[in-house]
Length: 284
Ligand SMILES: NC(=O)c1ccc[n+]([C@@H]2O[C@H](COP(=O)([O-])OP(=O)(O)OC[C@H]3O[C@@H](n4cnc5c(N)ncnc54)[C@H](OP(=O)(O)O)[C@@H]3O)[C@@H](O)[C@H]2O)c1
Image 1 (tube, rainbow, N blue to C red):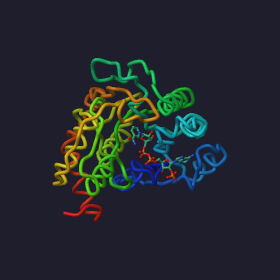
Image 2: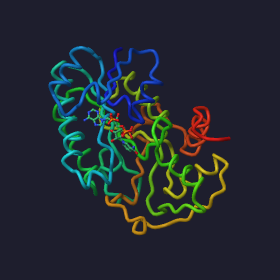
Image 3: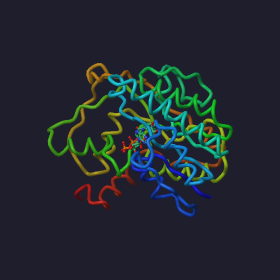
Image 4: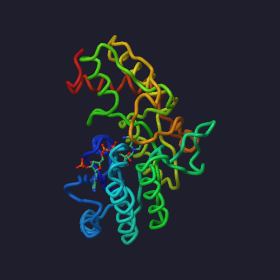
């Protein structure tokens, strides 16, 4: 198959390109195609002639989206609609990566794909707009919602914690938000397997298990052999611009019934630390 990966220079996109073996992968960076421009999207898809379009490009700055909602909706809403429309014009299959932030965090149990969405912030609302565009424009679509991504190609939460550990006597981390950290390498492999099995519909794809950001930070330092103390703080104390759901754990049931099961997040953190070392981004 020919697989067009839009957003190939992003954290997930880089791992999709690196780990998608046995198919012909066509990477597209924002320099190759700005998804806000439907003409460019059409030109690129005409030339690439993919069987599947994997849309991993997005405006992902959660706090920045509060300042700049136009940008968030232009990329995540209208940009996604452009890709969906053109993919449909050429009768191509489409996978869209979405987020746990479509939910408001009030559920007493892990979210299932059919649970009602109710985003608390602009970024989440713009991704809901993207999901709606996919469902409205495309006939053969797959929406893969994921959460709390970390990977070695771009600085994500664990790398920021490791950096803080080198220059701060202690690190304060939010302990009252729960989610499922997900290693982009594991997500990339799952996406590849879902595409190969011709999956459709809305699915939740995360590493297994759940934790708070505080527990996530402690695990990163443990796996990296760092002893810097981590102190729990509340969301209110962190004083971030965008509201975040207190609980955005995504149920793995929709993935598991397709025979795909991602390892637990603690193991994934171990693999991430090993990959950082292999890339020379972390001292022994
Ligand atoms: N990060 C998370 O914790 C998280 C959690 C849940 C879901 N997600 C979703 O997972 C997907 C991948 O996230 P990520 O963290 O890998 O993102 P990322 O590292 O921020 O990368 C986003 C990519 O999108 C590209 N892009 C931005 N605007 C574009 C435009 N107008 N046209 C074309 N490309 C554009 C960027 O290109 P440039 O670098 O050139 O700007 C970059 O390659 C996104 O759909 C995101 O919403 C992420």
